[in-house]
Image (cartoon, rainbow, N blue to C red; front, side, top):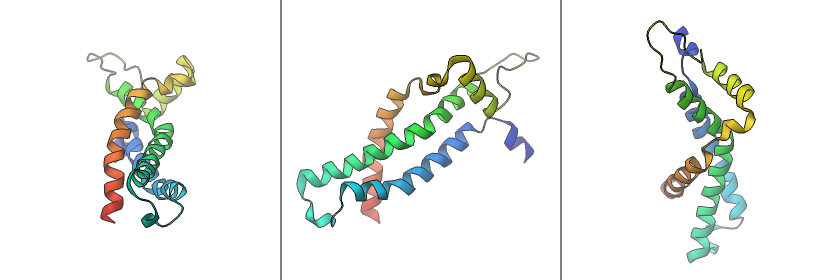
Length: 133
C-alpha cells in the first residue's frame, strides 16, 4: 500500500479529478445554459445548448486536469537503463521540476489536441448520461 503513494499516480489523480469535476459541474453549467424547462427549447436551439454546456464542462475540467495528464506522460516516458537514476522520483517531483525548469506554461503544452479529443467525447457522453437519467 505504501508503494501506491510513491509511484506514478498522476493518472489516478487526473481521472478522479476529471470524473468528479465533470459530474459535479455539468448540471450546473447545463442549468445556466438552459434556465427554463427543457421542453421550452426545440430543435437546433436545444441541441446547441446541450452541446454548449458539454463543451464548457470540457473547458473547465481541462483547465484543472490537463497538467496531471502531462505529468503522467512525462513520468511514463522517463525510462532509464538498469542502474541509472530516473529523472523524476514521483508525481509531485515531476510537477515541481516541470514548473521550475520550463515555467508554468509548460504544464499546458499540447492542451489543444487533448481538448478537441475530450470535446468530441463529452459531446457524445454527457448528453447521453443526461438522457439516461
